[in-house]
Figure 1 (cartoon, rainbow over the protein chains, first blue to last red):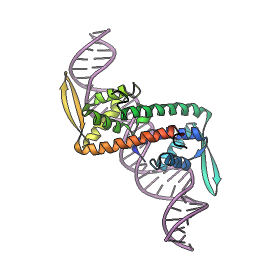
Figure 2: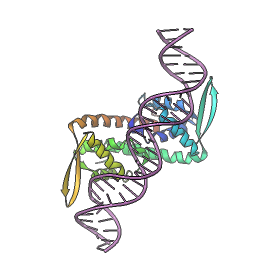
Figure 3: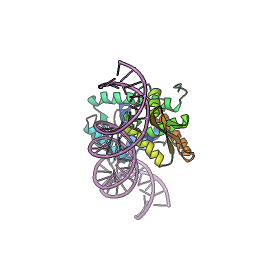
Length: 110
Length: 110
DNA sequence: TAAATATACATAATTTTCTTATACATCAAA
DNA sequence: TTTGATGTATAAGAAAATTATGTATATTTA
């Protein structure tokens, strides 16, 4: 996928769901691909286990729908999950800032 | 440590060595702690296996020195490792930009 | 019309990576 | 003399990702 996304992927998923309300797995992969201009391609082997884990933790709930002959499983953040999502997104934001400091040491007066 | 750094840590180490020329393990942990204002604390259990792996891959070389009674193992990037380091740092920079796009969707006209 | 591509989800086996705990050693400070 | 800081190392277990595969439908292309 992209080695650097490891560890951040689950929070990226939460961020997208937080912004968009309701999404299905394939849609998430396409959205990330679109935002990053093809740079980040999430594989199913990484995506689905994360979605299932977040569902098991009751951070997400899912409902299946048939659209144009194909099955889609829509996920959304639960009320309980929302607090967790907000926290993790804040941590991811802090990490992004830290990354910028490390990558641009002049900003950090290193 | 901080779940989001997973996957980026080895490149962060390469970036610090690229900027500073020569560092030892403990120094790397302190530098990251300093730059991120205590936010990111790298554990030894994560740090040393990465340093050893990079050394085994001949991306880094190490030399041990005794300073003020204590042993330090200084690492630096090899000529061969430099190309790899430059590539990975560029990828990390791209990832940081992608993260910003995901975190600030208005910038990406999502 | 057959094949390829895109859409859509799922999982199992393997590998990689991280966490946690532990171990050893020196030096400085309380 | 005990604690905290400095310094490296590794082993066991847990967590996570990669790779490969499987299933199914719709659309596009040859």
